[in-house]
Image (cartoon, rainbow, N blue to C red):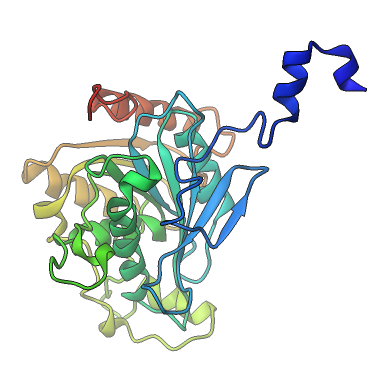
Length: 313
């Protein structure tokens, strides 16, 4: 019935396969097959495991619409205290925000919990950055414009991914492992930076949450899994957001990182808000906190990540 009321050319357009859908940058590339695809929401999910191994961590790509891609990319690490993943609030919603600005976003489903204690999640973070960089051409992004954003525990993961990053192993049989794991920019939302710090009583917040999930955790085994001081020598341009009265992750962790980065000459910007609960994602509907993504937009734009690269790149 619809075609009877439309011009013939419009009718043909609507009836064509995939009509009305913007094509994913990797669609039609047999050399990079996804393990899952959703043509309705236009997402693809990729296995991060080396060839021949069972699936462990995954990346789900949210591509910008045709004509609006800046060719920049970002790996998104949701929080969840390393016992779960806030994949909607700090994953999909964040990916949509970046994709709407032309940045191809990859939501990382990293291993966590008692079966995958630290540093296993960090290994997944490093693998994620390498995967996007190694497959940049197939994914429609530039290998030197790949950032990482993390929230809460995901912020700790993103910071540790950067702190432990390396240039890759050129002789590896796995092409993903041959490239760098260092993000080109870093965004930290209320990051759990001092999660593994052991207090005077011999406890750590990381092990406290492990206890909630009923798995054994000795604080001293993870005390060294902290982004400082190594992060200051490897950090790219960094943006930090936190609230002063965050009742779950103390703001001083972010203050300490900002101070160390500033003293080391890192291009770092921090935005602290007086009030706001932990885990508000892009603002959680709070009129004040919803301003921080606007500051991030300006920060990314000033560094060229929201602009299309020059012709010929």
